[in-house]
Length: 424
Ligand code: AMP
Ligand code: MG
Image (cartoon, rainbow, N blue to C red; front, side):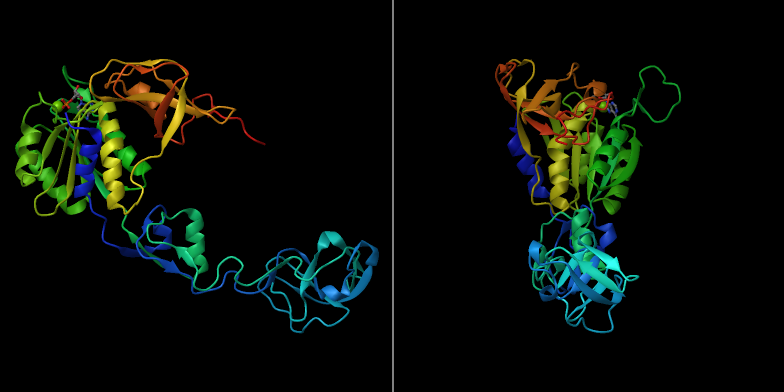
């Protein structure tokens, strides 16, 4: 058996960052920035009001509670997107909306709530103190010219997209979103709703793996089911090589398996294919190599559905994250408290136990294993949101510390509970 870390290193060593390319910012959500972006524009671009109110000279307004009220002549009204055609002189004010440019002469805004109109709005009565700079947003308060708005390696979030738009950018230079091909192998597999002949099973893995790829924000390429047939599998790989940055197969990599997948991958990988027994449970069998010519990484996952998912989590996800340009390749490991016993026997492997992980009212993460831990029990996996990492040994007793990977942050149980009290 090969240690998990070693198998992961082997994968990561063969996965290379995609070549940077420019794409429209609206196609870049979740992508990794390839080239630092430096601000060339001020944000906000001009001095403006942060409130609806009256722009004025602070020296004209009451300096303290005892000083008011004062009456100022209203000389105009400024909407967002418009300018006042004159400066504000002594004893004058202008109606101003949030985001409108502060007129020349004015140095503060009195918000509407702190004043009142008189004489059909030609006079404003200020009865609250106003100081220089009140309700004024200065040019460059958010971003100054020369600021780094996105380092290389930044994962673009919705906020970043707005930050880039604020710089007037149409396009951003990123590592392209990886295209990941998914292929199921096995003569027993059937797609669609038709009746099953004896010995046949439905192809669950392709749909699960396509979903895992899409959940990462990558482009999923459905390569279909390929029977245990050398020609068919070879053709599928040839097509995938052109279209995909990585190829994921499931089935046919275990020790006892029919040799077809092994033969074909062996032939097309120029001897790079490694057939591993990784010291983990589930997902012990794992194959990895690169296609000859293109260097496209090929991940050979085990056929059991839960094993395929765990293998995706531990090998495909970090590998393709590297292709996508991510610096952080692995999931955050969360220390949690075992809600019940997580007993096991020593076997030289790390066990990845399907579990529910939730934060309790005291801010501690708690973990409960699912019933049904066999590698064909996909429904139990569907009810889980985490993998508990139980190292080799006797396991963990209830109340003990167990590390976990939160594999599905969006998880909530069917009754809507997500754990953790709302703090409002
Ligand atoms: P294998 O890795 O090919 O030895 O398959 C191990 C187990 O997973 C067998 O019970 C297969 O029938 C099952 N299996 C293989 N491929 C799939 C698939 N695409 N969907 C569901 N089960 C599968
Ligand atoms: Mg098989």
